[in-house]
Image (cartoon, rainbow, N blue to C red; front, side, top):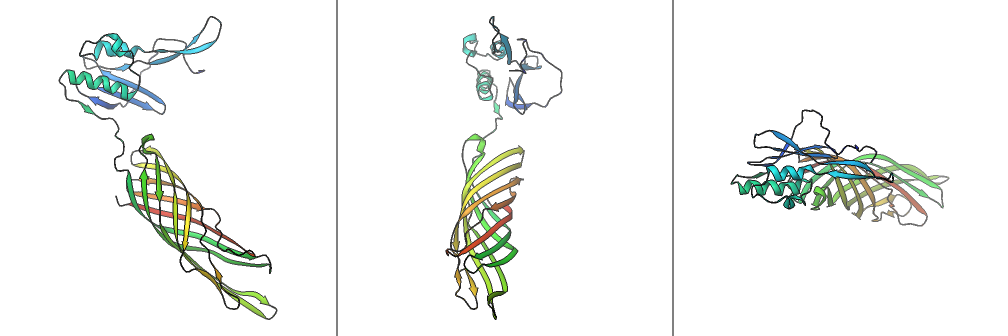
Length: 309
């Protein structure tokens, strides 16, 4: 409200703008967009392009309270210049200063005049199902602790290859910004720690061989930055199916690796409609289901994607 003018009349300033053609025919509807600002233009019979006037302005009542009113001069302009069927002014009173509402007026007018219509409005995405291959690298660290013996075994940080296939369903609303996805992924981690204290005269070796199929199921939100370049955020719960994984010990009994899930979050970009790059992090995943063992298994990933269809 603080930025509204108190003047009902339009206050023009001269600028050079690029206008997008929305409807083309005998009468042409144009649009100008600048963030939240939307302005519409059309051509008169003299082929001069003029603005369809709509303006909110501030009004102060007799009691001093402030409110806004609207100058909807565009309705009179449509009645005067985009009115093939000589409709009454009442026929234009319900027209909104919005693209879809204005499109109907111009399409009807051009059809009445026998003019060929070209409607250039943005079409919703029709291919709502996408499949991508998703190779990448995992940066993983693994550490286990035994609360009884106070053993602290750090397998260190490793960089390993991962490979996934993502199936995505784009939700058909809000300009296709939301999507659901599932991404079966093969990954592995192998580490070894030698010379762990076992007794005053003996040490023990630990070898972790961890292979699994992760299955993140989640939601994605896209931000359309510019044509053929999008930013996106992802969140998912990643189920895990362990493939014959364990921590082998040369003296004690081997420790079985469990199938426990965790949350994963990603941020990335999509470009040229085919390629994507994502950085993903996961919360700590519990690797061992033993009361006296505690595990810290953390993974971040750099993932490259290629859209198959």
